Image 1 (cartoon, rainbow, N blue to C red):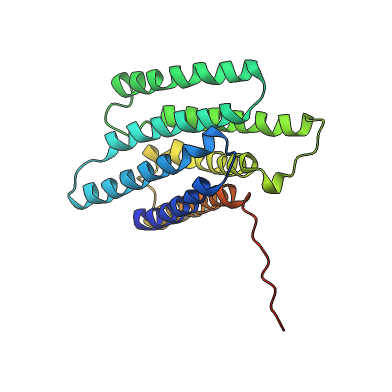
Image 2: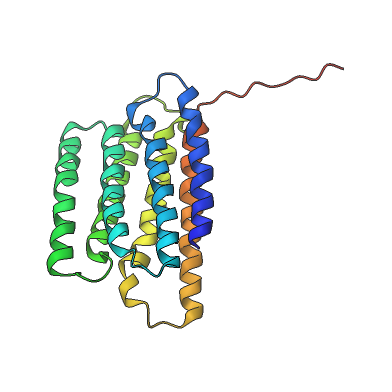
Length: 215
């Protein structure tokens, strides 16, 4: 499954390179290619660690913590409400502290499902507020050409659906193999959807010229 994730992430990263050829881009979009490159490096490192039978849990705890902070930064950048922006900024500072406390005193030898679940809820809550702002806006917005819309759609769907799966992951190991395979397939589909919507966000502003055939 990790290899499939890696291929999907590479395709999304290649799509993100198109951002460098687009003018007047928001700052948060410019950060995406570097984040996706880091994601690919982590995925490759995870595959190598599994082959060497080395526990990759600490690495993924650090990365998923950074991932939630990054997505909160993205959501903070596209939300207009000043008070909500301040709340998200505080959450970005507090969240890694909570992860550290959880890792030190509670989930010391397992994946941080407690704080991961909290991160899911934070992302979903911020995405819902973004859509609330869209519905409240007084001017028309072409959502098909709005990168933030595609990004929030991907994050909302992914973290809403993966919350019960990853949040309970430490308690699912006793289930039959066929059920675990099906759960992995669901996570695989969610990742495909997430990175597909990210790719649309990177490419939606590009204007493709129509080529007319000369008869």
